[in-house]
Image 1: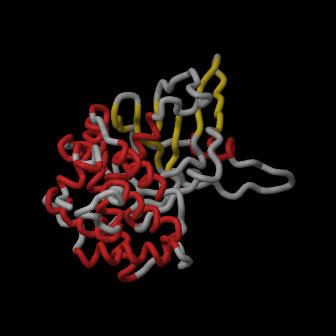
Image 2 (image 1 turned 90 degrees about the vertical axis):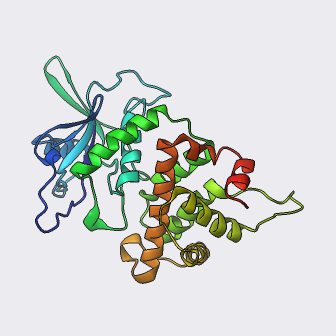
Image 3 (image 1 turned 45 degrees about the vertical axis):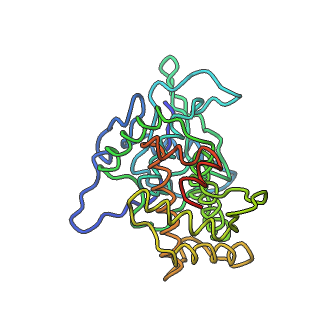
Length: 301
């Protein structure tokens, strides 16, 4: 099986009980499961963390649970053997649309048995994707209710025909989880939103909008079409202005963000998730993003 252990810290609120997958395997969809690793978690950590020479390997992470694929494909695709058909990657990507998490691939591996001998093969993912961060570490990881929503989203995604704009925005949303730096995250979340609504209006003689107006006015219109409350006009302007500040030198980390900046960033991420999710489950919403003309016509600018 292909395995992605969760190494973060899942906080429990007052009176909140641990999710079922802390104690027992829970099927998500098909061959994809979520559940505890038991004694396997220490063996995975020892198999992946290099012992070095005359060096004591640090204590392995907790690994409260893992997402894993039973009967993973045995043949490589495009030179990749681990999660060759990206079933686990898509599952994790969609789970972040439901609840942002720090699930990452540092300890991803394949566990298999060959004539009674167990073999643990690292997926070999280092650097990018190996670590993950989210804005609210006290709301990290996956809860019982999230799994119900994830099953529905996986079913809808398998049937959805998404425009490239939505696919690009979805990839960028996943990319957000892989960096802690705000001078990357903030410009990227704005770029993901722009990927959905921005059009090249340089050739238009009338009705031409600048980038700021496209961002603020079209996203405001989009929220009204979705009949949800995501942000105000002032919020959108603040999000866009902060993007310039971070792109031009402001530093910091996601876990150090505070005050109104944190509120605006959360609004940007939350809005992006809502729009992508809506496009996956509702094909008429996805059609809005099929071309420049449908964006201009539907969003009235």
